[in-house]
Length: 179
Ligand SMILES: Cc1cc2nc3c(=O)[nH]c(=O)nc-3n(C[C@H](O)[C@H](O)[C@H](O)COP(=O)(O)O)c2cc1C
Image 1: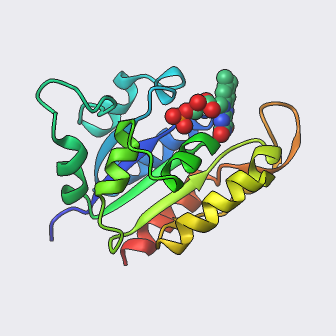
Image 2: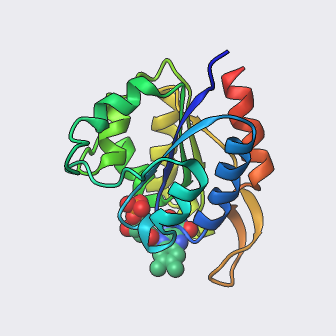
Image 3: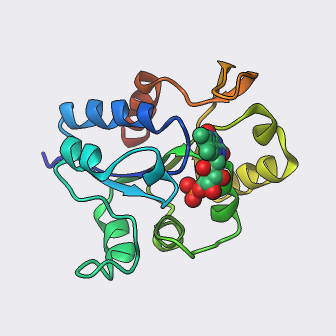
């Protein structure tokens, strides 16, 4: 049986380090993983780590020479797409159909009959904001699967909901979505 192909997209959250653990789990379980980063994600995690974990160069710029159509091709290649961690910013962009970066373009070109997961990670106030809540509801109405968040200590010192789920839980959600 061929390996399942995961389009793994990271946005600019402190939780990018936890996403690397999910990617490592996926690779060890014989998934093929293509890493994609927003420009902000690259402030948190380096391409060397992601390419080292997956064996594939990170896609982070729609206008990369030699990869000009990857914002379409990768959507056909993938069996499942996930944004992990998903910032408030990327969630709101996706819900508004904004294709100004590679994650937005990939989303619009993606066939939502295939699984598309969002694993939010953000401060509890950002999570509770009506803009974020409305965007998550809109995305769910388009067949996007929004994972829950954990409650607890946040990097800013606050305590509340909005923490990225633990890597094992995200790995299990991906397996379930593909089954
Ligand atoms: C140290 C630091 C941590 C951040 N963590 C988060 C976060 O967990 N969730 C979030 O929504 N935004 C977070 N941000 C803000 C985002 O990086 C910012 O909104 C950025 O524009 C997101 O862009 P992107 O969605 O294209 O990756 C953080 C910013 C900094 C400087």
